[in-house]
Length: 440
Ligand code: GLU
Ligand code: MG
Image (cartoon, rainbow, N blue to C red; front, side):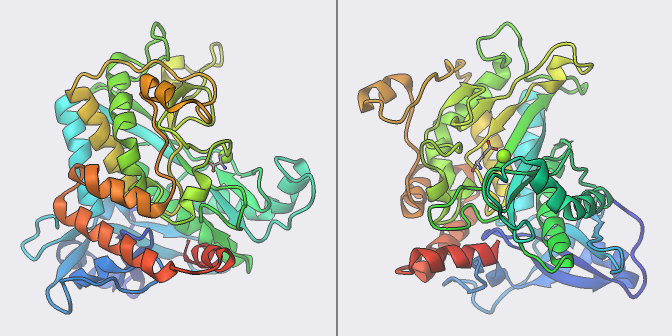
């Protein structure tokens, strides 16, 4: 990301994605930048309890206390949405206590600790990228749109500006695609390593929103944009590098293509997945997306090249000029653009590292359609239907997923989500979807 010093009178927005999935923080003036990189910006602990709709969940912090969002200078970058508008400079930060230690409730610190453990215990670095789908009001829907040249031509000015703005923000796009659903667009990006995987997702969402706004339009990462509509995911493609930077996830001799360590990691994720989805698919409408036959993930399956799997082994192709070991990656599909990317990645790493510690054997890849299989068959195959609603997912997380997180962070997350549920209680599907579309 760009790292030049901000102008003296320029406001740099310092923040992070919060537990509700919204990028929040405060601005600092450029002439104070070096000082602010140490001091941070003051942040009432209660702000942690904001729901995606900007209301405050009940909490014990009240008006008291202070934590600090301390910018990470390596993340300083800019959102340049339109050629005739000055760019907005932003930086991601850590939540720190007054003594400077990471606060237990900081999602970025949680991810950093998980990645450090993965490196220390397994010698692995995570490489990956979130692949976002979103709804863009500037793509007026016409019959026959999915993947069509006609739709592409109509989003071309938006796509060009988006590619340029993403490059400038340090989040290089691979392409921009008109997707399957009405008004749906997808942006795959170039993979990064470590915490940057999540940072890039956070920045990408803001760049997309800003570029849409520069056209007088709106982009939303809501998992569902209309009652009964097609879902939008934020699939996480990932693989591993060893200490020397060599690909470590691939073994062409195995049944799935996974190396033994990657297979244990994936088995660990699969084992914990039903208890994790509250975090990775965190809204009421996320569960409309996570249904069978919607090309998302309704079961905790690992499968080879199957878009209904929670963990999909992606294809590699020989003779393309790029080694297969470098192409090989796993796609985690049970997540969406309303989730906090740092929490998603941290939970994935925590669950996967457990699998490595427990030396879980490779899972046999699932074949066929789990929907409609008798419960006994599913149990025999070690496959489970994921929770079918946010309340059920939160209950499952509270019962056997929360130990993956620092206790205070898990409590805060549950508090925010329960307040969100209470706020939406009894709303008609149209209104529910409208609120999520506006919030994300
Ligand atoms: N829109 C689908 C989802 O909700 C994904 C379609 C695809 O495979 O790209 O995850
Ligand atoms: Mg897609």
